[in-house]
Amino acid sequence: MSSSRIFARSLSSSAKARAPPSGFFARPTGEAQTPARRRENRANVVAAPHTPPHIPSEQSPNYPATWSKSQNPRPKAMQGPRFEQIDFNLQPLPLSAMEMIHREPIRLTKKRVVACDGGDGPLGHPQVFINLDKPGPKACPYCGIRFEHDHAHH
Image (cartoon, rainbow, N blue to C red; front, side, top):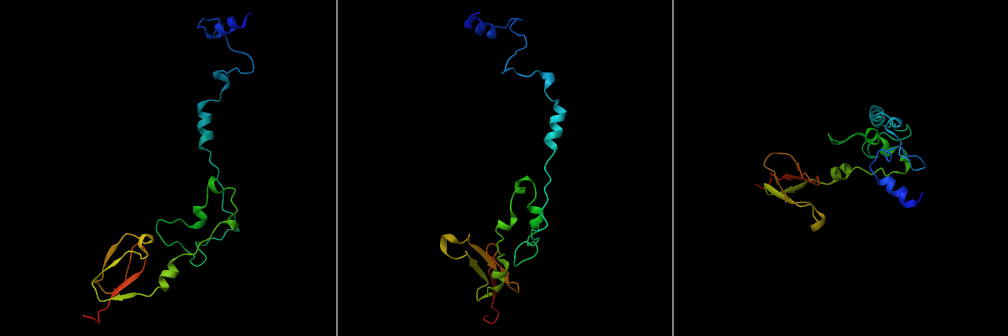
């Protein structure tokens, strides 16, 4: 048989050409494939890694708990297949900026409304205006710097 006849036979739509293919590149038949329900079960199985006990459970070296309602604790946040083969001793454990902001002195002002832009021009944050009519210090929502109205200067 010539190669052109074999090629023509493979492209024809006759019943003879629909015979099951044989050879190295043969496509498996539908019966040999796994049923769809088995594939679904396999797709639903997810690795359930756990946080090793030697990982510290604190959020930050200088702040032991979470500081936001939307923040997950460190052991809970570092779960799943993404963290399976990570050495947590080599991962950064950044300091919380809350202590640094707390050490920053409250800025007393004679004005009833102050503007905070974070300083440093383009390295700051969007400018916000903070109303100081009510007593007590008020923090900037972006950088946390606290301002208070100096009532002695009325």
